[in-house]
Length: 95
Image (tube, rainbow, N blue to C red):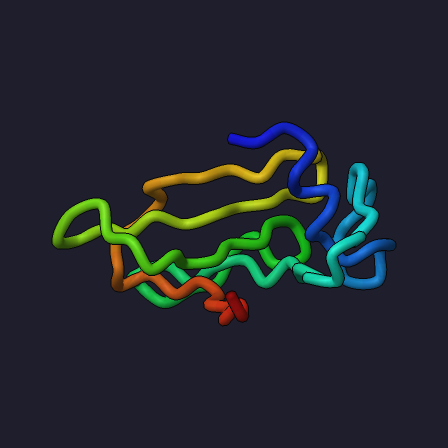
């Protein structure tokens, strides 16, 4: 987890993010939106609350690393959150 890194990547305001959208300044123009996730059984959750992005790195055969941001904190989390059958956002970033 990186303290305050989420601040620099989240879209500002509360049009998309639930209040309080702590610390969001979006200085890099990444404009992360809180798309939530879809569980392996189908329902969506955390929309307007959390943003999750797959990384290109697997942690094992069934799980991948992902980054997460939330509406109520400034952190950028790195998690082995879920099984690859779950749906979270993907974002291509030019190197």
